[in-house]
Image (cartoon, rainbow, N blue to C red; front, side, top):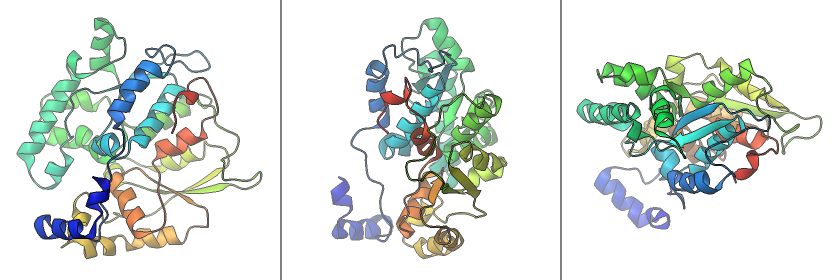
Length: 330
C-alpha cells in the first residue's frame, strides 16, 4: 500500500478526486501497529509484564498511554520510545482498548456533532473498567486504573481535545477525565523536577564528542503553546548530559492537520512555514529538531532535509542501560 500511494498516477488521481496535493507526501503505514506490538511486549517484554520496576526497585503504579491514530498506525516507534521511558521510570503502562479518534479532525472542520460523539465514547470509556486493558490486573486494580490513573498523550492535538475541547462540547464527565490528562513531556519533566535522579541517562549522546554538546532545537506545537508555558521543554532537554536546547520562537508550521495536504492550500501552507524553515536552516550543523506534533514533523520532513523527532525518542535514546531499557528496540 505504501508503494502504491507514492506512484505519480495515483497521486494525480488523489488530487483530482479528493483534492490532496500531489506535492504533499502521504504518511506510510508501519509494518506493525503500535497496539499489536504492545500486546506482545506486555506478554513477553519483561519477566513480569505486570510489574515494570526500575533498577532502584521502585514501582510507581500504572499510567495509560494514549496511542493516537498516527502513533498507532504510522509512527509506532514513538509509542515504543514512550513505553521505554515510562517503564524506566517504574510505571506499568496500559493502552486503551476500543478507543476512538479523539475527534480533532472533525472538530477542526466544524463537524461538532461528530467530534462530540467521539468524545463521549472516549470519556465514557475512560470512566469504565472495560475501557482499559491492563496486564494481569485484578478487578480492584482495574477500577483504580480506570478512575485514578494518569493518561499520557504524545500528540498535543489529541491532548488539547481532552483538556479543553471536550469541555467546550459539553461532554459529561469531561472535567474528570481532563484532570488526569498530561502531555508526555510535561509529565516527565514534572517527575524529574521532583526526583532529578529518577532516570539514568548516558553520560554523552552518541553523536557528541567528549567536549562537544549536541544542539537541540524545539519547535513548539500551537495547541500546547495555547494552553501552557512550554519553557519546561528546554529544561527537560538540558537534563540530558551533553545537550544544549533552544525553544524556537516560531508560529504555526503551516500544516495544521489536513489543511496543508489540500491542493488548494498547499502554497499557502508553505508560505506559513517560511519562518520555521528559516530558523531551522540557521541552526548549526548537527542540530537535532524536536517537534511534538505529527503534522509539524510531516511539514518539516517535506520541506527540509531534516527528520525531526518526538521528545520521547530523544529521551529513550538517552536512557542508560538498565533492567527495562533493554526490553525495547527503539
